[in-house]
Image (cartoon, rainbow, N blue to C red):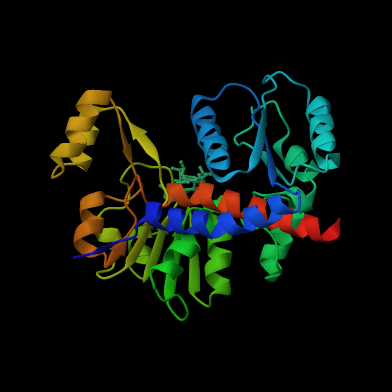
Length: 306
Ligand code: NDP
């Protein structure tokens, strides 16, 4: 039976480890603070931000959400970020992505003070990651590393394949695995014979955004499979194909009209992998946990400086 890598359990561990650190900061009058910039109306982003704000509240991290309209000129957004950079009670600044197409995302992300960049997207922090220097790491890949380590999955010396080369997941994931001494291959939409490359993976990370794309012939028997994908499927035929042996998922589809599907075929993962992350309940919970961890770490660093 494959081991299910339980993201909810690891999230709870991480949160309980943060509690005494937050209490120690609060005792010095330095309650950690996170500011979230949510530009325009994107229903998925609004749900993610609500989850982040609630997680902050649960843990005693102060949070505020700024919600300028999608039409805001880039200069005004830059001024908002400059103000957040200057405010001492703000330890972390998160710019919720994607930004509306008319906003210059690189300029915005580059304007966040690298010391308050809790997503690890600022070019300075990307450089720190590449060089293996301390700094905030992007939350989703950092969470995946925690999940692997806390389940005792060995990384050093193993073959890792990351499918997806985004700045948010794929590239930083590959670098984090490399720093843990895996032999890493990054794949993308132009990679020839993707199934053969994936079948070499002892650790396979799928960060693609295509429902159940990686089927049985992409998986090496006994591999550890990390499914980052979060794809909402609202076509019943597709849902019945993906969940052909999971009636409870189809019942949930019938109730809600859609269902969440990862990038890897769930049956193939269960039958071929030695360990895998479920969707939901695998990678997702860790993204928020690592955001909280990065915010607390930023508050601790800044408290030392004051
Ligand atoms: P992006 O769209 O930015 O990147 C997708 C990557 O997948 C690209 O590099 C793309 O290649 C590659 N790709 C697309 N199609 C194929 C294909 N047919 N074969 C091989 N590679 C392909 O997505 P993100 O990295 O932001 O997110 C990936 C998934 O992870 C999404 O489902 C997203 O919702 C989910 N996600 C989940 C999180 C969580 O907390 N669980 C957090 C962040 C993301 P190319 O570069 O050549 O176009």
